[in-house]
Every structure is written in structure tokens, then in C-alpha cells.
Length: 426
Ligand code: GDD
Image 1: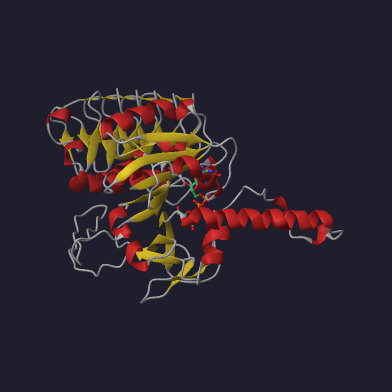
Image 2: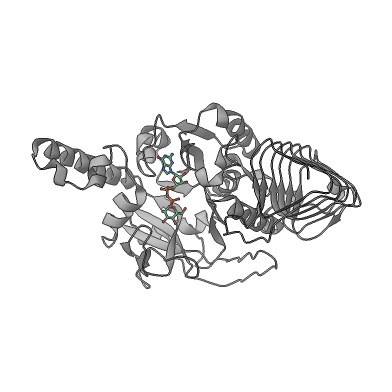
């Protein structure tokens, strides 16, 4: 058996996601019409012999109760939210719940960061192939590009280390932090967030471990406790590094405390994905990732894409999701990369391109929304325009309307972030 753990973090994190994270925990923010965490959960569902999925975080339990029970029913797999009493770090959180995670005596534990967007090739990472070949799909945002190729079976089970890290070659925007042996795929060197060139391989935040990971985390904790005791005895405490003094014994980071020291010791290996991969730290990236997941739906869940009766003949361009309760006027033109949530009303002649329209929004006649996220219960007046240039990495590259913003008729909002409950009337 195997189990999967998704690290969802908590309310002290995700500040870059404001104002969208004011009322909704970031992991539940919808991408392609589904909560962010839904995408890794559905990928976990495809792992053979999966016993349970755990979400570990320090958000209040009530924020996840409804979601966890509905997704458990929908996917028919136990999904449980485990709440930390305080942040324990990305490895410490896993260790804190080790007894619950090991209840089913799993041979392997998948560990996924919630805020990454990729195709989650989990079964491939484990290396459970009946024949020495596999199919590799490459999804691209605008156009379909399927590469089918044969690759050798090299993955976690064959490496027989403690863990395998999903990695991606991405040199353009940031420095890669890890070096892997090109032949054996062993992780040789790991530096967290380097400021100079180390490699062009980045850590995707998706791992598979054997239960030995718990012993490794335990060792870090014990070592830290020993150091704390030594410091206590030492009169030179002020000479100790501030970082080592500040960290509590049970706070263990996966990157600095596990991946860095265990690199080069034949314990950790890498598995490279050729598919899309992005981190979802900002609203701009959430809009980009919503588009990537919509494009993926073409292969995984085409029934979720609009184009049939759901939109009552509105004109659809590219990949679009429309919640069944939304009402879209037949003369509206929607897409590409548009996601429309529950109870939204879209009036006649409206044009929507590259946007996420959240629950209970009204977009009135002939309004235009481009490269924007429109917050819950907002209203956009007739002939208004809410738009941005669509640079997903720039701070004001998309326009965001917070919850319950009113844009009155014939008002133009460009490259702006509007905080909740504002009225723009001129
Ligand atoms: N439950 C819980 N408790 N989750 C946590 C905690 C904690 O104390 N601290 C972090 N997390 C979760 C975050 O919500 C996120 O999903 C994941 O653990 C990693 O968070 P960070 O440790 O803050 O790292 P990061 O996201 O800045 O970068 C890491 O992940 C990237 C890929 O997502 C690094 O490993 C990068 O190298 C990597 O590219």
C-alpha cells in the first residue's frame, strides 16, 4: 500500500496571495473551477494501491471539513485533514503525524506541495511499470503538443534510495537548486534558493519516500536538541548562528535539513518531468495555472470543459470551464482560459478572455473582462472594462477585484488591485 500527503501550509503563509486569501484558504482557491488542492488529490487518486490521502496544515479545521468530506465521497478514497497546532516546517509537519500516516503500514509515502501546478506523474515516479516503456505527454498552454516516446524504467523503486524528487529543467526565470548524476540520477548536491548558477534543474516539490524518511527527520530533531543542550551549557551562546538558535527542535525543513545533508549519500534520487510545471505563489500565477489545468482537462476530464449545452450556445473560444449553476447569455463570447464559478451571471454581449470569475459575480451587458480575477459577489456594470496586459509574473500584470467590489457602468479598470468592498463609480 501507499499513502499520499499534501502539505497545505497555513494562514501565516500565502500573504502574496492577498487580497484573494483574505476569506478563502489559498489551497481552496479555484483553478480551472476546482480548488487548488483538488488537482494534486485527483492525481493521487490514480496511484495504484493508494490507501489514504492526508492534507497537513495549520488552517482551522472547519475551513477544510466540508471540502474534505465532499472530495472523499466524490473520489471514493479517504481524504483526511490533519491540523498542526503550530507550523512544524515542511518535513516536521510530516513527522508530527507519523503514527497516523503509518496506520496502513504503507511501503511508500508520496509528499506533495499544494502550491505547485504540474501533471503530477506520481505512478511513473514510483516506477511501477509492467513493461520498460511509458507514454509521456506534454501539455502546452495554447496548442496541443503530445510527445510520445519510449523511455527506460528508471524511477524510485529501481533507485532503491530513501526518496525520489520530481525535478524539472527550467533555466529561464530562476536558478536551479540541485545537481543530479546524469547516469544514475542520484541527487548529488542541493542548495535552497541559490542566488548564483548551480544548475538548471529545479525541485518541483513532489516526492516519494520510503518510511525511512521518518528516521531521517528524527535524526535532525535529535541533533538539534543536542546542539541546544550544548549551547545551554556553553558560555559562548552569543557566538552561535542566529538561525540555529531560532529553530525549535520539532521544526524541520525538507530542503535545508533533509535534502541538502542527504544529497550525495546514495539516499536521494531524481525523476525529471518533461511536462509543464509552475509554482502558484501569486494571483498572477494562479491565472496562468488555471489555464494550464484547463488545457490538461482536454485529456483528463473533457466533460468539464464548456462547449456543449452547459453554456446554452454562448460562443466558446479555447478552454473554458463554466459551473453548471452559472447563467451565461447566448450572445456572450467566452475564452480562452476562462473559468466561471457558481451562480455567476454573464449578460448579453459580454466578452471574457483569460479570467477567473468567482462565485456570485454579475457581469452586465457588453462588459469586457481580460486577464483579470473577479472576486466573489462583485458586480461589473454595463459597457465597463476590467483588464490588464497579462504579464503573470508582474505585480500588476493582472487586474484583481477583491470580494464584493462594484464597478459601475462605463468604468474602466486597468492593471489594478482593488481591495474588497470598494465601489468604482467614475
Ligand atoms: N503543514 C505545513 N506545515 N505545511 C508547510 C509548513 C508547515 O510548517 N511549511 C511549509 N509548508 C508547506 C507549504 O504550504 C508548501 O506547500 C510546502 O510546504 C513548501 O513550502 P516552503 O517550505 O515554504 O517552500 P517553498 O514553497 O518556498 O519552496 C519549496 O518548494 C518549491 C516547489 O514547490 C522548495 O522546495 C523549492 O525548492 C521548490 O521549488
